[in-house]
Length: 290
Image (cartoon, rainbow, N blue to C red; front, side, top):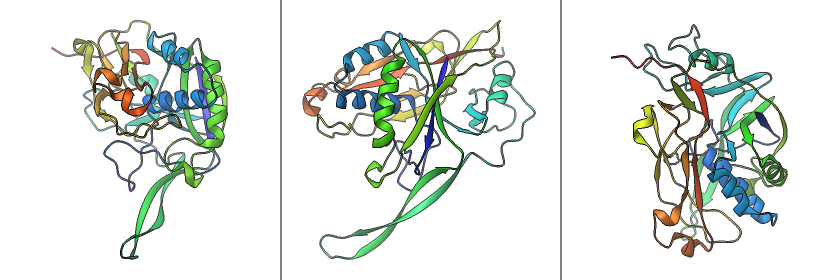
C-alpha cells in the first residue's frame, strides 16, 4: 500500500454538498480525487478511459484524503454504536485499536495539524453598486497536509495527474491561487485483525448490496461538473456510505455512469461523466449484538 502525501504551499478550501462558503470539510472525498485525476489526465491527453476502467474493475483503488501532520496520520473512526462520543477522525494508532474493539482510552486531540480561518471577501452588486462582505473558510497547514492511500496497477496515472494538479491546485477557489501543493509518496501499512468479521471503508461507497451494510453514515454527494472540455452542469445528488462505514461482507461499490441516473446527461455536458463509488476496505472486528 502506498500513501500520496500532499503538502500544501497555500491554504486550501474543501467544501461539501450542503456546506456553504462559511463551512469547510476536513476530508477530500474519494469521488473528488477521482474527478480531479480524470480531468487532469484529460488535460494532459492521457488515456482517461483506461483510468476509469482500472478503477471500475478494481484494478486500481484509492481512499479519500485525510489530514496528517508531522508523523501523525488521521483516519475515519469506524461507524459503530460507541458508548461515548468519539471524534470523526482519529490518529492511526487509535484507528487500529478501533478495528478490533469498540472502546479506546483516548480523549481526542487538542490540536489538529491545520488551522481553520475565514477569509473576508467583498462582492459588488452589479445593479446598485452596493457592496457587502462575505467570508470563505479555509484550512492552513503548517507542517502537514492531506494524504490518501493507493493500491493496484495504475499508480503512474495518479502520479502524472498530481504533477499537473500541484500547480493547478485542488479543492475550491483555485483561481485565487488556493490548493497548490507539493507531493511525495511512500509505503504505508495498517495493523489489521487476522480473524475479521467485517470491513471498514476508507472511501465513499455506492453500495450494490444493501444487506452488506452493517453500520453506516449516509453522505450526499453532488456538486458541479468541471472540465475544460465540457459545460459546467450541476450533478444529480447521490447518497453514498461515508468513510468509516462498516460492512458485514465484501462490498465493492461502483463507478457510476451519470447517464444511468439522468438520461442524456453526458450529451448536455459534452463528454461522459462518472462518479467514483468504489470501496477501499480494511478488515475489522465488530460486535453485532443479539
